[in-house]
Each structure stands twice: as structure tokens, then as C-alpha cells.
Image (cartoon, rainbow, N blue to C red):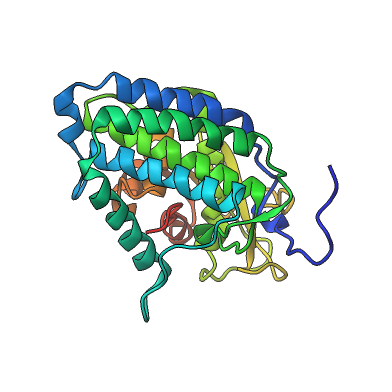
Length: 288
């Protein structure tokens, strides 16, 4: 694969790239299986404040339409920012408008549409060039982001919404380690951006460790030559200033604000500088 042109921004501080492309078809099939297994009453169960299962499914469909229209078809039209509106407020507003409009659509029709367009999204990503510039990933501080991060971020969106639906109907998090591993790896790319206002001597390392088959270790190192002052690409500097160990369930919920940092801090094991651990546990890997 050809390297990106010299005029494109480099993102080495985000660490090695993630190839989520083979996982989209699997995630698509898992979502359809989840939705097809629901009882009629399940569609009305609350997932997050103000949204039920039906709303979340409609939101995922909107993500599919948006990705196909933008990346496959080059379609640029759509809602505009209101005066003074932040990115977060804009996204929440247009998401709500979409969900409101789709409350007239039956669950069966939603499943049919997701079946068709979700498969097209999977094929779109399967053919993507990971080194191409793509949509920004605000929570990682990359705009534009390389396609490898944008596509991995999109996988985490689909996966997270499916887990939210599962939880709403009394099911546990899907334990499939392959997809969960990619999701956690993507979420932890937010660590350098999370620490951007945390000052430490060059070479200081903050390590996050998640045990288990889907886990791993991520070390952000304080540097003087990266955008936010921290990098996931620096060599191992020996003993980190702090090592934060947390289980996979707590990790993905923290990154998506399913649990608050104070709750997560009560569950983690901290070996080293507590202030650095508290800063790391502010991580958010969604638009929030």
C-alpha cells in the first residue's frame, strides 16, 4: 500500500493503525440477529434518556445513510450549523430530528432497511484505503483523521449501540473477543487527547492495562513534538509513572460514559501517580 502524500497530516502519535474492515460484516449480522430476536414490547424499552430501542435502531440506520451518501456518493447537502452551535450540539440536534421523523416507521421496516443499507456500509469499509484522509475524530484530536481511525470509530459506534440495545432488554455485553478487542483498541486512541492539558516531564508514561482475551496495554508518553503533548507511539520507557488496570466492561462503559469517571476510579487498580490516573480516567471516546 502506498504511503500517504507528504502534504497530509501525520498521525503517528495515535499509535499503530487498526484494520477494522473485516469486522463490519460480522457486526452487521450481529445487529440484525439482536433486532430480529426482540419481542414487540422490547422496542419500547428505554436505552438512554429519551430514546428507546426503536430510536437507537433508527439512529443506526441514519448513520448508514449518512456514510453511504457522504463517502460512496459524494453527497454534501444536509443540515447546517445554527449560529453559535457547537459540534456536539449540532450532532445531538440532527440525531434527534432524524429519530423523531422515524418514529412512524415500524420495527419490521427498520430491520429491512438496516439489512439492506448496513450490508452496503460493510462493503464500503471493506474496500476502503486505510491511509486516505477521512472524517475527523474529535475525541482523538484528529481532523482530518486517517481512514483507519475513522472506520474503526464507526465500528465502535455500531458495536456500542448494539450493546446498549442488549442491555435494555436484559442481555449482557457480547463477549466476542475479536470485535471487543478492536473496540477497546480504538477507544484507547483517545488517551493522548484526554491528557492534552496534563503537564508532565517528557518521557513520563501513563499506562492503561485491560486484562483478558480482548484487552491489552496502552502507554501514552509525554512528548514535546506532538500536537497534544502526548503520544501512543513512543518506545517503552520502563516503569510507567502510573499503571491503571481495569476490566473490559468498565473500560468500554467509561469511554462511552456508561459509567462516570468517579465510578470507574472506584473499580480500577492504580499503581503509581493517582493524579495522572484520575486524568486518564476522564477519557471519552464518543462525541459527548
